[in-house]
Length: 273
Length: 354
Image (tube, rainbow over all chains, first blue to last red; front, side):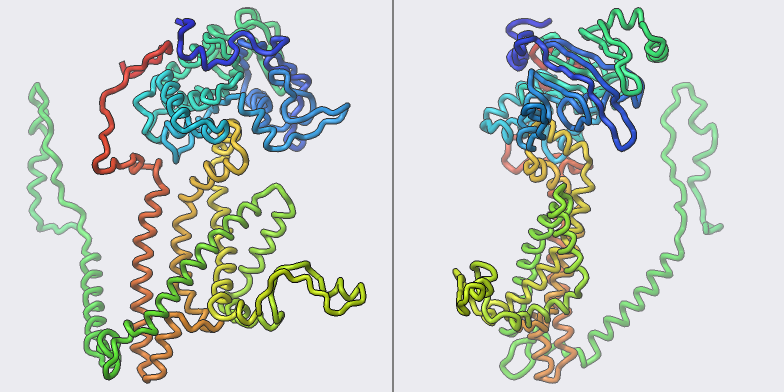
């Protein structure tokens, strides 16, 4: 279905090209604690540009927390995360790390789109304004320009007739598609999905997954935390199984799903498949 | 309590077999049951009607109200108390004080609330101290205090702090590095002192209201805005505060009405251009104390009613996007939204109502 003249293609920055070494996200030995509770115990993780990495695991395994570390919504306690070769949240001078200022962190976040489990659309703004807000305020694009782009994005996710609705008037699946359009409006080079279908009625899951699959086909680099094993099998380039704050196993979805190497992976897959 | 003698025609039509035995199952008759009777309500209405009649009778027949003095004329060639020049001036003063004190108070409140929720411990401390001080002192005491604060300094101005003391260190007694100054007697008497007392006190209360509003906004909203790259300032102004307004507006309406009434306290600052002061003055001068008080009550009732109407519209504006009133009402003359469903074009195979 993906064609070169697809309108979505020019929304995906550098499809397949990416940074010099081809790595979009690199995490090394990432640790994260809340007080005495250590939720991430040394995560190593790599996503190459244009790849879709699917993260699965039981609740409380730290997969959502790790995703939130990638755009610095959570501050990590140890380790390093780079996105597109840029260290997230800190600047390294010699062997000392300096915290980045809020404005610098905001700049890093511009190129990382995020989609949340609970959609988190702005309820006081129309659908169109939700999508326009960041391009207008952050990228200082002209209002008419941003609106035109927002309309074409909403058209792409199948919501062209909902531009003047408020989020509260939409179904969960429609809201999540708006949320994806909102993230794409910043023309991100990386998209993070935090259980994007977990809050949806089963019959609405498909419409959101369809948009994500199309995005994957267009070459968007994606990290997807999900329980949708079928999605992982179909579009995932790599599958990561996390449990109790560590990466238990990773590989291509085909390998991991068909032939899990660890008993914990096997036990988890037996329950969700 | 159902009246046993009440004939119930609905009882007969609800018998089994009256509609359900036929093969095509016609729609059953609508239920026409006898509603539950509420005799207590009728007793209540009767009691209230009697009380209302007694009150109306009191208003009309008791000559101490002196409605003629209040509404028409309270002396030869004079208008009614409510409408004399000084009272109307006082009314303007009270309205001006209410509006200005609320504007300044809300502004202070937002700033203090944001400081209170800031990660910066210095700002948090200052905000806490401000709220602590201005909530602790009664408004009446503040009004009197601000009227007398001129006792502390003869002049108030801008310049280098401690200039006098610095001068003494270097051996001169009259070093003055004031850029601009004004006599405190001119600055801090009357209207401005009363306004400051009310506004600063209001700021402390508004700070708590705004803080509650900000904290009522789901943390996911802030996260979504931050993830899009909005700055802290933009997150606050564009995302958090507009949603907090839904929680902030109703108690602010309350505060505005309370402020309208509290303007009567500045009579002790003293501010003379104020409604209650003027009416009391007329009352004591003409020995018509009670009618003057009634006139004041009437004005406060009228102004509060207007504020309640304003509050209704403000609340409706800030609840857009929530509940049944979610749609923007089309402006008259504006093009109607196109009811035709736009077919999704492009490569995404979203199942969209087909």
